[in-house]
Length: 475
Ligand code: FRU
Image 1 (cartoon, rainbow, N blue to C red):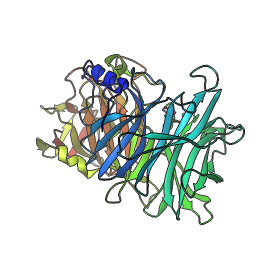
Image 2: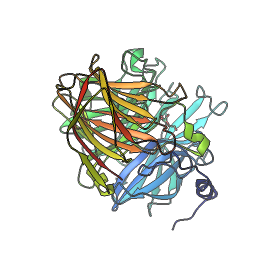
Image 3: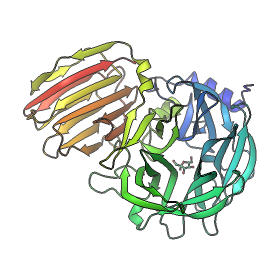
Image 4: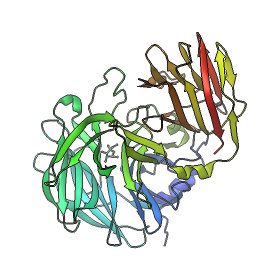
């Protein structure tokens, strides 16, 4: 039975007042209010369930609840009542991030209970414990309290990811030890309630690797064991790590003795302005699918004035390739959304602009780099963003255009040894997701074009650009 609480009713009523100028039409977002991390992503009893860090009462971060949406196909979503409230002694400062498992048919959530020991919001005095909740109907959850307490001397201890393997339950938790070198701690349990510390699975060795590793995820794909973390405290270096916090992966082998041998060093997952705290799950057919929070701590969020903030990225199928890269591609289910289709014959342009007459939401665009001579060439999306190839630096650049200078910045990726570049792009009301060369790189950013102004216009600066193909769809 679906019973709506006062908070659910508040969210639904406020949703009616949300200005939909920037509100997504095909991404998961709260009906109103604030969301951050994806939590408890799972396929169970014929449905995909996504939960999210949620503050229902305003478009700012506040005491965290778990919002809840479900879908049969990962494309069409239905909002369910809030699943977890910060209403117990052990989680009254927020039901923080965590995961979901199917425990022999019992839908189980493991999440972090946060308590402020000093003033609310002062994270130098906190207590974080891992807690459990279960449901029989997939809607209403009963809390069972803490199942794992922090180790001596550690306050920041959160974001449990739980999975089943090797006839056992396993949990990774992000932690900030007194050394301020972030780490991922590994625990094991026969039953989800009694947990034993196994080892530190991985940790920062220098302060440049982050003081706290948030939101760990650990999974096997293409016979590699991938450890995802969202470290805090990495400084920008050249083109890299330009966001306030980053999310990245290491690749290695989870050995028989449960230690982790790292084979490939940390790489950022996404290179846009707005991607954080991703989590992954196994789809009904076995694919590994990842979803991130399409926003970033401390960034300017113009939609807050419009009554909401935060959305999820599109679900991305994840694979690992022989060049040591995690490949992220949009799930094929999204093709169901396609309606009007248009394609252009290959063309070239020199010091001129060629605009599409109509606005689409999905594009596949490729450029012939070998035959293009311009210093810079690419396209604008209305007055909100420029996506271009910079021939001198050999980089693909996503530049956000805004009158707010804090938003008006660039992110880019290298184009080494490429003679062609294929871009698969999704443009929602205020977001752009660019999948480059079949997912070798992705750039995910929010952008804020003025009303009705996000058609694509190709351009070049100082020379010729060769556009080898353009396909577009309305979604
Ligand atoms: C990551 C994070 C998590 C925490 C949650 C709180 O974005 O800081 O570490 O559980 O958000 O909302």
